[in-house]
Length: 105
Image 1 (tube, rainbow, N blue to C red):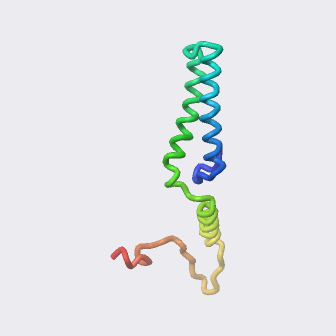
Image 2 (image 1 turned 90 degrees about the horizontal axis):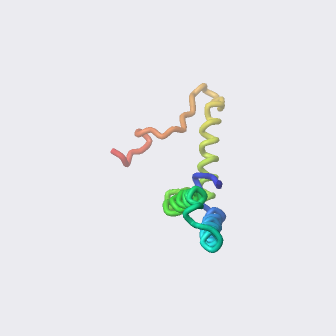
């Protein structure tokens, strides 16, 4: 499945295809077999759909692909900051501290 921290148009399209496939399978079972006998199969299909529907419903809490990429770049820079050699031997600390947030006082 797509990155768990983003919900893009491609993932939304896959959700539509998943729901359509579930509907088509139910119609097929109804026409050719007993729906009750297909319980395990339907439970799996519905579980997959339910999970993806949940992700769709909370998508506003996901990063856009652009924000996710920017976050990745910042995290990579933070990891690499420990490897920087400053001329006067100081340590570069990129972590936020409350001292750097005067508006919280």
